[in-house]
Length: 398
Ligand SMILES: *Cc1c(COP(=O)(O)O)cnc(C)c1O
Image 1 (tube, rainbow, N blue to C red):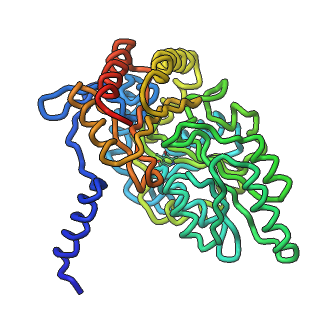
Image 2: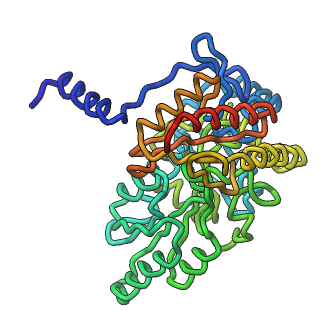
Image 3: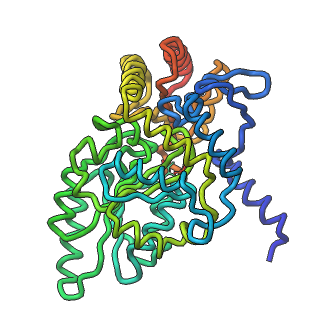
């Protein structure tokens, strides 16, 4: 067996060699769109704080009150002595907003998936996921012990084939089949063809879980996500999301039936065996929902759409493929890890923080920049980004 340090050093060397080593960039935030790195102030196009709510006075005030009333930590698991009125109030708000019977909050979105999927399916069952599903759902599917099937990205026809095959092979035994997709995909920014997926899963008696991490706060009349925008609230069994993106706080949640929540409270290990979310985070998230649902949310989404339209108008002139979707994510397809790093470096030199996203976060040869736009960006911020992309593109042969 290699000595521990030698083994670790060798792994890092291998990552270095192919341009895939990751490092933490020391940053401090100064407002919703600015971060400082050393003595440099960068415009932040790398945050999922799509509405700029993480710095909103209402969230800060709600968090401060909860902090003073309940302390910095919850002290125990929800089931032991950690369940506080801030958790229950948040869950009532979530359920009302998402138009479901109930909701349950978790310490993070990742923990939400990791607890939920194994609570619903087990060995002998099937989980059928979109090929680009987030790592947390993939890991959760594997952890569940169910057999994993993968359908081509956003391809209902391929999903249909898989479901038909499962039907014919399992005509007698009837295993559970859970289909998992995202509302807006985190690295590509495109939306799932939800109506078609719902029709398919209903035809085959399967269940559907939608991870609304990137559509919550942005889509639908109440801005509760893609499921609401498609009018499918009563037809999606499991809606999942994070409180850490457009809602500007931290934590994750499931929204669904009372039965679903009762089962999760009894079976989701990442709910049961973990300290309850920080009360201040729950209170801030609830304040965010209040804002997002109301006229202020409508104004913020309008501002975000205006900034996105400014950026989208310039994207076709760039030398890369730059797909646009209904959310706030704009990938710039560079295709090679080192080119993605080089391009991100050039943008950083120009005062802009845009992350290079590389394998294994995205498939090999799909390395890219991932621009995220916020309602808090100014038109001048967008112009600066466009100018810097043009300049970097002129010096880069794609
Ligand atoms: C960010 C993200 C998560 C995880 O949420 P956290 O609260 O950050 O743990 C889950 N799913 C998707 C699609 C995400 O983008």
